[in-house]
Length: 246
Image (cartoon, rainbow, N blue to C red):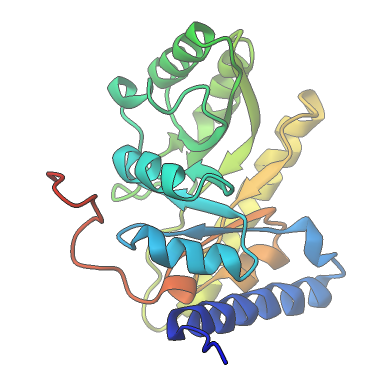
């Protein structure tokens, strides 16, 4: 009798628990659970752990670092990949045109770079505009009052497809907890609705992580980016291939 690896059992348990949280939150607000896509953010974890989560039923994965993303994408090619961290224009080339959804478009220069590199490989690059709704200096993203201008600019570039908005709320005070994220998520939804009235293709809301995913789902998230609840605590350093350099 073949035993099931402990890693696989742990992954299946964690995936099931997160999916239950999403379903429960959807039930509270009358949404269908399939309207929310779970993006497993695997930063610092090995491709073997990614594979265990993939085998447990998750098909969408996110990374903050380009190098880590590309290595894991090669190791688990059946998955769909998302770049969810700040992206430097000079690092746009290896991402563009590879069927990777970029969640962090926050300026015109990055839009230009992604469109140019996607054009070079005859592809269309899918993007979300990252919005700094809470005006948090510790977070990236386009200022709230500049989002519609950036959307208008980016969607007119020939090789970009702007599909929605993304945000990361400020760290909540200890005495408030995850409910502090609700007005941030509601504001992003309102902005998305405003944009969608002009540009119907702007549909996605990427918001919510391990701690506050229920609040995000209740406020309309279509993509939730979950790391710790699926993979456990982050490792102290980024994962890298054997023999690689940081």
